[in-house]
Length: 386
Image (spheres, rainbow, N blue to C red):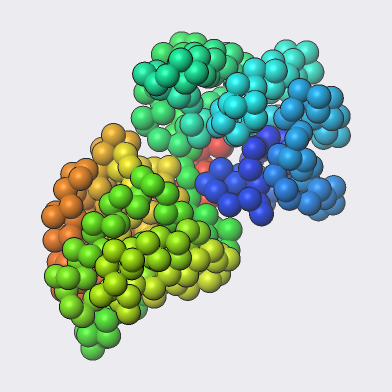
């Protein structure tokens, strides 16, 4: 484990109590490295409290990536042991200045070139696409320049899915290999309940299992809501005994809008609102089938679907631009083509009506999660090559 015992400075735009995939991933990464004996520092623009005690030290300031605060950022980094590795969690929109914070990228270059800080780069999102208005196209160009610089500074680079790797391969030096770094279930790994969550399902439990709600866990953004507002009425009108449980931030607001359009479904659709990790685990576990639809399709970077897989839930999802070939090879998630709403509804109905098949799929999902996406896999990737 030698190189992982090196001191590491995780620089991330988000960290708990911030809510979001980058925030939760940064926390998991800090915990994984600290458990291996690494001296971990987290520097973030989060609202997290600053703490300089314990194995994970956090320096947080909402304005720390601003130009006027780069000296403070430099001082924060200098607090860590000399030659500490910087592990940058890259999302161009996360560092301020309307995603155009080139000064921060130049600061990273200064740390690498003149302060001997090795750089590991985790690309959560690489850049905007061209094709928008003039301002968007300028931002897209600057994003590519920034990732071009960072990839030439990095001694190791990672991405959360293969689509990102395809996009950034044209901007990296030939000598650099961009690796997949798994994005695990944030609610499971940070809560660490262990593998005893595998459901024990006996024949006599099937009828009660069928009465459980169908679930969706997410943040209910526009790109997800456009699927759910068609799927939920379609399923509930087809299956009179079914109900839906909407889980996560934004769920109550979405339910209110859905019920305004479909008042007859009021008693059959419930919403939890924002919940802590332990309560999220409990509510996802209550569901029979999880419906995890989103723009671009299921992918390795989707933490909501990882939550369902890690809790041995059968899943219905859409495939799309970001869907990796492994999802088709594994054949554990019931996949439908993007915008195939009839197919999605039919697959949900099949799993609700066939609990034995659904439970078998859920157990396969559990195995796939622990073989490919758990925090143990993160550690395995980080140790690779040493």
